[in-house]
Length: 459
Image (tube, rainbow, N blue to C red; front, side):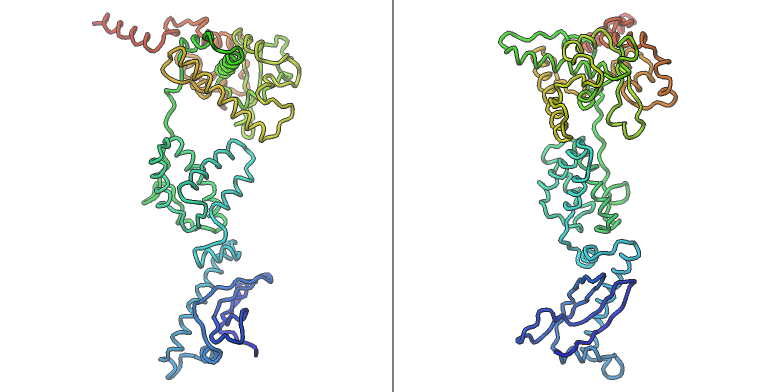
């Protein structure tokens, strides 16, 4: 076949664009040949179909048509104008992507067709694969799993938008997911959406979240101010005795979970991930009194990296003596949490999840036996510490730093501002052992009765 002439060609930087016949799949029986827009960059090609087909004779006339004179009114010229418009569309898309530094054939295909061999979930899976923090990775996986159950596994980029997100929220409502869970999932999906915008897979105008017209506002997570127990209830859990009929192994496991929960409570709400890694360190042995522990919360080690200190009160010492390892420099205090000397990150994440589940199940059983009308979980230790400390009137700065929060002006002189003796007193008060407040150990019902009595006396 003789050389096929090009209908139109241009160059954008190092990208060549041409409108020509697609001769890649010709056979002797072929009569009409498709016209395509061919894009060439770095010896790679992308072919965009125009939907038009011509014989060689028709194509020759098309190339020669100028629109001048009588030919201006012919059908061939009108067809050529439509092809030139398609060419301009491709050229504009290439210029836009090139100017923003996002040009590649995948992005060009998406921009022109709204379709891609790559999907939104491919981008999200890549983010999950690169994520180093296992709790965050699990959160992303759970959110993506929820989305897949609603929308399927083939989510094109052009589906992303406010309407799509609202429909997903409606589905989560229908399935009974709490607003807190929905908020976590919606914050998770923002990460791949922002990455898709950065890569040019979706347009900024598709971004679904915000307070603008038509955008989706992520619901606020439910406040957990009720997820705490008072000192009187904590004392009941501390004094729990396993009922007859429980096996010794199960009773021991339940009491260990109680011990872990109390340790977390007295340590400012330390989470199990930090309990798994806390060690007998140089600070513990260096004090001479062996009455202080220090650690850095995993959640802040990449930011402020400030140490949190735990005064070893008599109650804390009992927990350490019963469930902690023999003090030895560099040794984990609770090696039974991980169960491995050198666990992998995946093993650590699984073990922490399991211990959290054990504490939740065991304390749930304890609450049922004691007829406590709610089920205490590991997260309640942190909320209980803060709530009870506030009710006792403990210094705000002490409470915040005990929880691992960064407080301006306190971090550097924390131990000087709150010496060991004072912190030991606070720890005792958090268990009602040296409470100066005569109402500190009252249950909520008892406190309400006292308040009603006082109101009656005032009358």
